[in-house]
Length: 239
Image (cartoon, helix red, strand yellow):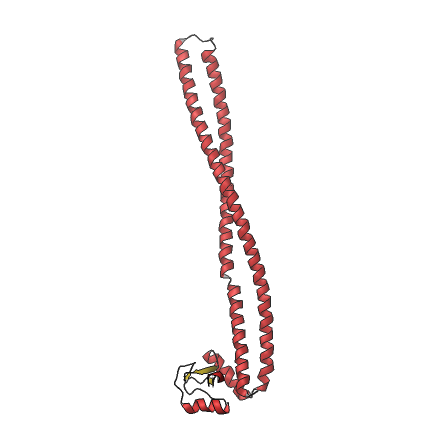
């Protein structure tokens, strides 16, 4: 295998390693994980809020139940005095009748309030139940996603190790000065090799003289682009 072919192999493994590192970074950034985590936190806070509101409304309902019982007791006692026949004074009877009407109005108002509270509690329970189910489903998705990411990370690390091993096998076979040039170009230019496409350097788009292309076609020697300095190569299938 010639020097240029070795460089192409090294270039391939470098690109594979770069792509692996990009995927690892994408996973470590974990945008999807962050999004789901934020949703879970929001849903959990909402569940806590509903629980608190349910507790508050239930306490209010219990208080109103006690107040309603007291009102029924007062109504019963008032009606007993009003219709029991023990009181004959018209003024007192009129007072008791007004008292009965007042208590009845309070009862009607309290019963309506209790009905509204019960409806509110039922709605909150329904919302809580649905939200809790959604939370469980999203939590499962989150767990599966994390497990999948962990497995993917392990697979990518293994592939990265394999790519590095291949690079270590190839590098010693390349002349040191050419290898140094390759490494420096990769650092300064992003990538060291550039394919010739339509007689142009794919790295900088410079039109190349025919003699440069012929040198690569016929001799396979190491040729640098005069403009960007990258090592040029051609796809032999194009010629």
